[in-house]
View (cartoon, rainbow, N blue to C red):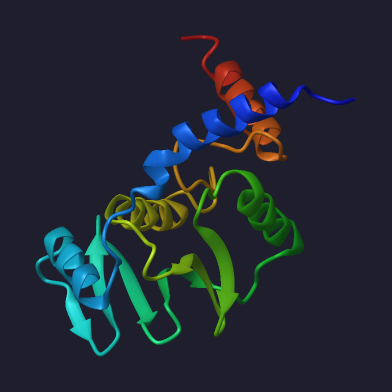
Length: 176
């Protein structure tokens, strides 16, 4: 099927106009700028050579960066990876697909982590704060909703699991 050139131009221009705010990026994220944001979130945050350690709602968050490689990583320790059963690992992978949002579950150095990994310089302030929240939420919802936040992708397995939990809780409350 061929589309008229006027339609293609209109769609292309419309996409550019709606995407234009995305091109109006903030100034580049730097280690110093990230430090100022971290200190605002947690004035008692510890600073080290290329990162920070802070606490958000009693959950420790470690942020490391490599400015030369233009990368950053926020990490929250969740539990020992020892004893993770295949069903649990499957659930973590399902969550990575549809409920973890921009954060992810990961295993490294014998631990299960909530992580957010991103290029450093294009990271915007609000995106960084959202990433920290999502990463903390992975730890907070581990074992229950496995969620980085209030949204789900909708194309994965978690919606059915949520519906099962919702139905189960409704059944438990039928007598109330």
